[in-house]
Length: 385
Image 1 (cartoon, rainbow, N blue to C red):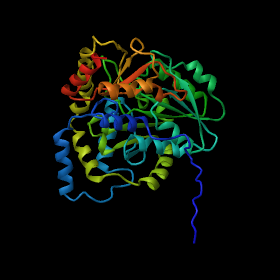
Image 2 (tube, rainbow, N blue to C red; image 1 turned 45 degrees about the vertical axis):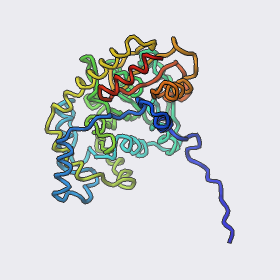
Image 3 (tube, rainbow, N blue to C red; image 1 turned 120 degrees about the vertical axis):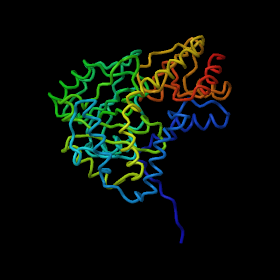
Image 4 (spheres, rainbow, N blue to C red; image 1 turned 60 degrees about the vertical axis):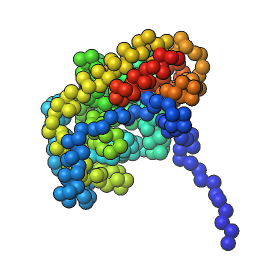
């Protein structure tokens, strides 16, 4: 019997190896300092690890309830009410997920249908558009206004039509480091009141906001709360990106659709880790002081590279710093990033990859969620460019 290969028609024909994998691989090959991928190189709180071990030893090793263990759901609801004055039902309006990305994918899949249009602000994190495409939807990219990465709401309104189903917000924005203002919230409220449009708010960096500014969650708006999926992540807050643990909040009628998708692609997530996070959430200072923790790292990194030839752009949130290299080279950013990794031993992410149209503003993104020694070694290389 002769078996012949048939050509599979890819659902994501334009998707290849991500730039994060490429730059991390290149950093390893060249023994370069890796400030490209967004994860800490320091340990998480030892008490959190101890709690994980404790609950494993106590036998919490079987399936958790589909929407998450009761103890964790209660702590998240309590925290959300305290910080944002937002009330959600513990049993029907929350779901613990395998990281923020799974929550985002599930939310998109639960409501986006063939030919629906979804608005995404560019530069954008790379997980939004593929999920929309897999659902048969169409992504409508709207560029943020350079160099402040603000939203032109006139552009947004001009793109809205009867096919517009969803608007995706990322606040604080990765990769731009910008924040939504009170006026942005008002503009978005007006849109959802006038149109049958839902919102997906990616807030995984909610506790990493700088210079005494405030993160405004969409859950804090009664109008937006009733039309929105709110996504957050324990990975960013507790330095545990490898544990892949996040959650989604939404009103019942949206969460009910979310559950339908969640139960058939994950069903439930790691039980002892959920129990551990429920315990660590009791220590409010860990997340309330996170902005100060990361601002010290941001400021230290910026001070170390202040004499470099790079232009340091504003960073209002997240743990990424954008550097403008236009005074150094006119090379395309992907090639320049690769060159720095190979020749200078420092890896970053070229900013154009976050744009659908590959806009090249001669910017690189560097992660400063690193210990002081790493930042010092990285700065030495940056200053030498």
